[in-house]
Length: 334
Image (cartoon, rainbow, N blue to C red; front, top):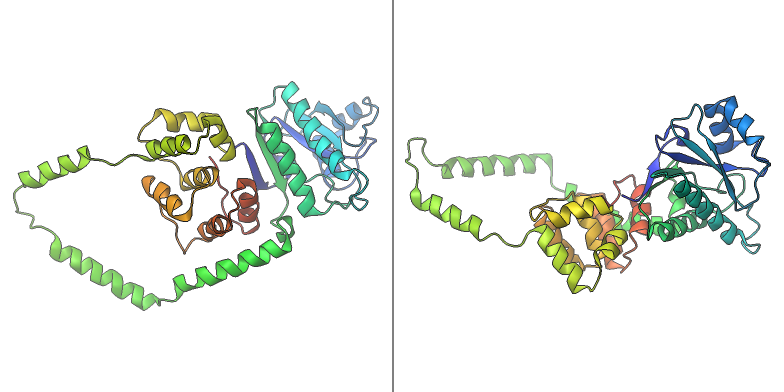
């Protein structure tokens, strides 16, 4: 997927470029900055000394040295001063100029930390929103994979109220799945096996030509596939292919596979991503999932979270992925 939120140490990301949340001197510091300099080795500091520092909101690029990336892009985020001193514009500029540098150096994969959210004091919820908005705008007409690298799934990244609402929504729907005892499940399974055994034909029974013909007829009458339904829905919504796969956080390469293969079977995360992009109702989402062989399940926290957003009319896939990340669930996309 073009934009991913991951839990990792940014110094271990095997990408074309990682972004360093630096200070104006570019000579190293604490937090992410210090970690990157230590992992890269002395060569990085030596090159940084030749750059003459960096202004807040701007970015400069160096080699990766001992890091598993080709480049390090150094950007200086704003110090939070209440939000009335141009902090949002400066933070957005950090992401935008870093991405432009990456594109100019033919980078296909870039990893960002959450800039300014540490000692610079930028509120995490707002910092993540600026990051997502700026990266999404940049990717609207470009092909690049961008990672937002967070150290933990801190609930504050989605806002305490949303986290509380989601937790309550999940609890109301998730707990009933386990109300049935293990013994009841066992009895149900045993009864099912007995029914199957009684219904099974004798080993000596001859092949049934009528059954074979009936099966062939059934296969000839297959309903529309996932790909066919998806393309039909895109047309019905008046969207272009590009608008749809961008909104679904799906790569052009994956969408091309789906379009060119009538019987392509996507992952559940991909199918749900398209349901969100098309702004389908819950019933329509279930129908699209069924075409791919899936269903919404009350035993899946991820499914319940997606259901929550659909019921509340929020089809922002990045907001949904932030929530999934906060609850330690797999993200939507390709």
